[in-house]
Length: 114
Picture 1: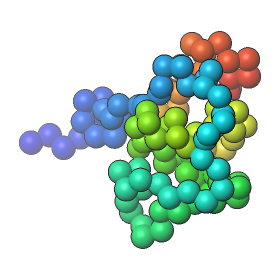
Picture 2: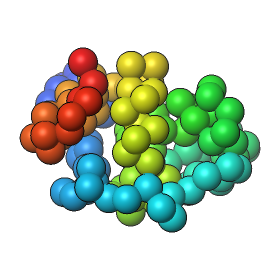
Picture 3: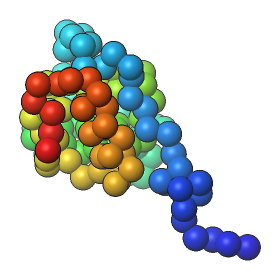
């Protein structure tokens, strides 16, 4: 049996959840302060709580949500303006970064990440 990862097997094959109108989605109502991520987003440690007012927690939570979350998770937790601010500091799988950068470009966002 072939156990190698590929575009059809492993993390690279996972769907990247990007809501169609995400960049025009107003930041009002987005999660702020201390949040608990859903189990399907962060299951590896007992502590699933992140303080989004702390830069390191914000980067970690955003990276997890972009890599593992659903469109609902992205809408609930990710503020488009904050995402643009921390983009270069996020640790993301290559396929997730590529999909989001394509979405930034397609949206015509004025300050799309590099």
